[in-house]
Every structure is written in C-alpha cells, then in structure tokens.
Image (cartoon, rainbow, N blue to C red; front, top):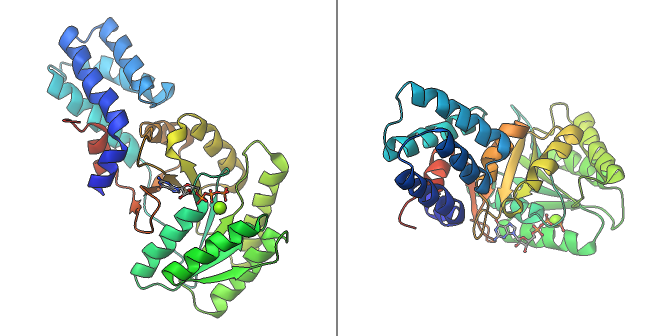
Length: 304
Ligand SMILES: Nc1nc2c(ncn2[C@@H]2O[C@H](COP(=O)(O)OP(=O)(O)OP(=O)(O)O)[C@@H](O)[C@H]2O)c(=O)[nH]1
Ligand SMILES: [Mg+2]
C-alpha cells in the first residue's frame, strides 16, 4: 500500500519532517522552548492536542535520560511513539466462526460509505468469497442504484427493499438471504446521517439490534467510515457513533489527495477504535488493509 499511502500523506509529512527538522536546525537543544514549538507542529499536523501532549511529556522524560541526542534520533523516536500508539489496538477484521460474516457500515453523509462497501465487496470477491450487499439506505432511490451498480460490477448479490421503507427490515431480510444462500460476507449499507441527529442515530441502533437478534454474534464488524480530509471533526463523529452502535473499526476513506493523515493518531488516542481499512481513491481496487508501520513511514517520508 505504500505507494498510494505515501501520496495521500504528503501534506502531513511535509509538516512533520520539514518543520521538525527545521526546528531542530534552529534549536539544537531539546529544552522547554523546543518542546513547546514541537507540540505546535504536532497539533498543526492534526495529531490532536491529547496525543501531542503525551508525546511531548514522554519526550521530556526520555531526553533527560539522554536517549535523544540528534535530529535523526529525534525522528526515530517520534516514529516509534506513533507506531506504538497505532499498534495498541487490533487492526484485523473479525470474521464469523461459521455462517455469514455481517459487516454494518455507517457514517455521516458523503464520507464514502457506499463506495467503501463496493471496494470491500471487490476485496472479498478477490479472495473467492461469496458476497452479498444489503441496501439499507432506503431514503434515496439513487442510493440503491449506486449500490446496485457496485453489486453488478464486483459480482455480488444485492438485497433491496422498497424506497422509503424500513432500513432495519432490509437488513433483516438480507441476513436471512445471506444464511439461506451461503454467503460468506454480508455488507450492510446505511444512509448517511449527521451524528448530532438523535432520531437518525436511534434508527441506526435499531438496524444493528435487528441484525444481532436475527443472527447472534452479528454484526461481526461495525465499521464507521470517516472522511480523512475532515480532521478533528472526525473525532467527534467517532465518539457519537461509538456510543450508539459500538463501532469496532474505522474505514478511513479519501486518504488520497489532501488528507489530514495525522488525524488517525488523534482518533486512535482519543476514541480507542482501531483503523482497519483505508480508502485511497474512487476505484474498486483503491482499498487497503491498514498497516501501522507503512502508515508511519508515510507520515515521515522525506524528499517530498
Ligand atoms: N478520492 C476518493 N474519493 C472517494 C473515496 N471514497 C469515496 N470517494 C468519493 O466520495 C464521494 C461520496 O461517496 P459515497 O460512497 O457515495 O459516500 P456515502 O457515504 O455513501 O454517501 P451518502 O450515502 O450520501 O451518505 C463519491 O464521489 C466517491 O467516489 C476515496 O477513498 N478517495
Ligand atoms: Mg451511500
């Protein structure tokens, strides 16, 4: 994934490497002023005030122990901090021990849910799995059509209800269909909703409840799709969705282009949800399993 991720993280990397190395050139000593300026750089890179403060206090302690003596040691130190932070949580996808694995996908409007489902469907089809899609976004006819297009493109069956119908009922029927037809993976698409809209969030809770009732242990993954370009607001979204549907993993879409990649660390630190997948474009193959090591390498790439 490194090539794609690298491009997506250039903006953050530019802040991290150039600014930090520049700072080190001016202030060779890691003193209070250096740390203050470094903290500003970390926040500017969207790492979040909490994670930035933690890095700074750790650094203060470790510098006293003479572990960081030059700029290359400084960068290596930061990389290790970032990696350690991302490795705390299990980033692998959970599958059902038997029967269909149900993956519920949610998020605010336009973050990339349906596209990410299309990519995941392609990803699992490539592994020889039988994939089904549930069109639980019943609000707009266009939403069902968009999912239908993906289903034909990647060779996955689709279960749809009537437009304006109950999205939980579609999920219910889809779980039934997935079991009856021996699907390996069922991906449930939901309508975009603002995390501040209580009634819509309740409806999402209901969709999840219906799935669990129909198939104990399901949904095996509850993926929250976040738009990587939104920065700190993503943290707020993650917090609310986690409260309502107990999100098990993040799908970080739009990490290509002008992404604020640093926000990944802020989210993992503040929300305690692992990033499991990343989206790096609009095509079916533009999906990658999240790998903390290559991600951190991308954040600190030089020669930009
Ligand atoms: N560059 C880029 N664009 C993406 C990515 N993922 C999705 N998009 C684009 O983002 C736009 C919205 O994607 P959708 O999948 O329709 O988003 P959604 O969350 O399902 O939207 P609603 O159902 O309306 O809430 C589309 O133009 C997608 O092509 C990505 O990883 N990179
Ligand atoms: Mg959609």
